[in-house]
Image (cartoon, rainbow over all chains, first blue to last red; front, top):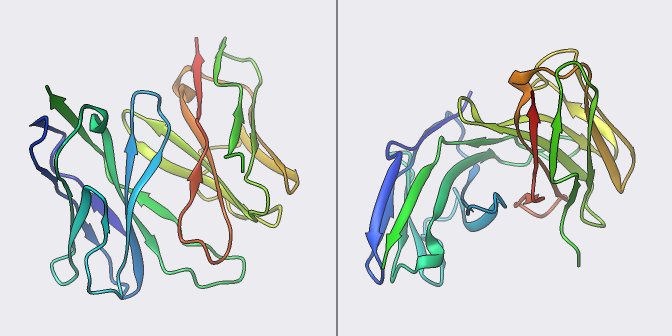
Length: 119
Length: 113
């Protein structure tokens, strides 16, 4: 079974600075997807960024980027120019490659990292 | 397009009562997922459906939990009887083949006293 580990229960950053959230995972699969979800106090789960394991290029979405190290099974999230609205719980998640048919890979989540942004 | 809709947003009930949580997936999505979030266990998948058929219910904690999807636009998660340890936030999510992302609803916060 796959496992996802977020070793930083809490992180803090000054507004406009950069912060990196860590995530490692364990799998024997070669094809899979990795995600970062944001959960603000409203509890809504919001997709931040997605990475396909077969892509060597790191995904980027505006101020959010990842450092995907497949051999090391590491998937960190970098937030640049942090804003107050970035304060939230961040979850790293793993999903097996969708084999099709009725099967859809199960999303496995890490325990989350609470990010605080100081003005 | 409307997102995933869940109701109620908050539910407070007493131990032993029946609780029904509702979900309307995004139109056109054929996969529907129920998750539970607790402090102790984090986010865990309870069950998921494809084309209204349950595919994997291995995460359903016990027989007190049941889920149905009578049609493509509606699903329920029922707890009968409820217990204090069922207190959690329950999320519904949906997606479709070809989309690699699941889209989450706002969640239902359940408190069982």
